Length: 149
Figure: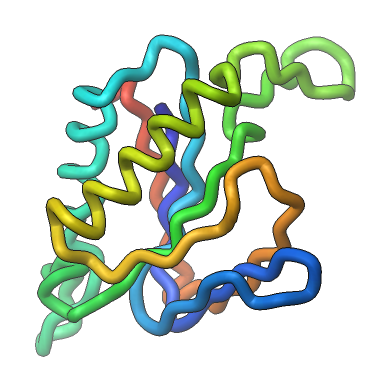
């Protein structure tokens, strides 16, 4: 499982020229799953995501978590995180999870963020052609990979 996390001051996602979701301060999370991923791996990744202390405290130190600042998440599925660019110039996506399996984990993660962690979570639509707009605050971008946790 892979997640690209961007700390943002605002973000939105459009599908067919309509805003599907938008947030103010928080994270944009690009989420990719492979066939080996499980609910247990998803839980581990979400715990790390929610616990990240990358917001500044009163002393300007990155010491506060998403819940400490009342932040939200814009959660976007993105199978292209599994692009393999080692051969040629056209990426291969064979390592990306089967769409049904990946969507199941995507929906599971959204439910855990909302119900398990109580975080306001907006989403795109799995498999849709989406336009994501954001203002990266920092800029601050972190990549989480379940293979390195």
